[in-house]
Length: 250
Image (tube, rainbow, N blue to C red):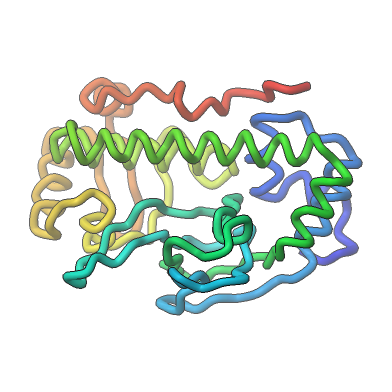
């Protein structure tokens, strides 16, 4: 987003829409936020934005596109630990810690604003409310990681898939990119497998079962909730952990 962007354009950005779920942002907050948008970059599919083990790493505010955070195990297998969508602040640990502890790879073409440590600290010193909003959003993202651990450890493959896709839907609705009916999703079955700890064959079987039961269809890059309420009940999806139903700090 250009430095000269209006406050209304900044307020409507995915990042501001996400933060506004936790803290009511003032014009001062939005102006300070514009400083984080100054350094816009583009990343092609498959070219890591953040590398595990790298020092002095930047963070990024995603404006458009999807990415995934992942770890590579010694045997070469990959575990996706999170999916990033527009509005997400990715690599926050990488810019605050001395060394990045994970990789981030674009799933689609990604446009993101690069944020260096000094930019972040300067912005936070100008507006503590914005710093509070970022902290709140980071805490919400940590709560999602807890749910992902429960997914892999205790939920069945079908429950795991349904819960994950419902969570993605709730996140996308927050930033204006999804509805209760569904959303566009660029994830392949192989990416879903790496995110959910399943094989690609198992992912295909689970998606077929959900479609045949009339609850969810995932075809041609689109997730459709055919029976949203039944899917929520089956997955035990309680969205209170997302805590995004309105600003907590006015």
